[in-house]
Length: 229
Image 1 (cartoon, helix red, strand yellow):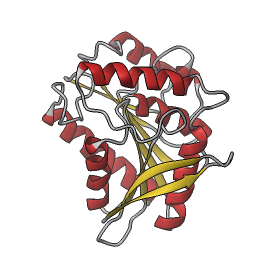
Image 2 (cartoon, helix red, strand yellow):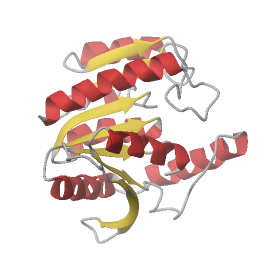
Image 3 (cartoon, rainbow, N blue to C red):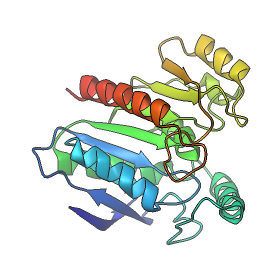
């Protein structure tokens, strides 16, 4: 079962979110953080998959502060629109949408009556990495090919929960050298590199790699189950 809800952030902002509810006993919660394409059919399907695994899944619309109702595809014009929206969100004062992610975690904790993990993809991977340090109440964080995570500034963060990070060795947005440097700066983070491109988890993109996606999901689920137990 799924539903759309409104999350109230600490500053009073109302952020929309997609919620997927398990049909089996809830074993915790997962906050799913979107790519630059909004809470589209792919992100909803990801949330649904976590619900099938027994987790309450919450996917907040992290573009809401600059534009409501964003749902893009994966054509060049969608990429251009998504990059523009991301830039507008990143330019917001303070920590931008971290307050909305905190609201999603708080909601998930109450309604799942348990611990909460966060999984993010692309830009959502970067937001997940930041959340590991800045958002309270997280028990695990898993960024997938988070653009910007391996930059010098972001690599210096101090996560407050266990982190597992996934990268592709063919990713032209994130160099392998920067991933190796990140690993040295974050020795307690579990880092996995796949023979795959950026966006390898998304079955709606040309870069989709079923082998890498399946292996990353297997590792992610194991990591989440362990840390939410």
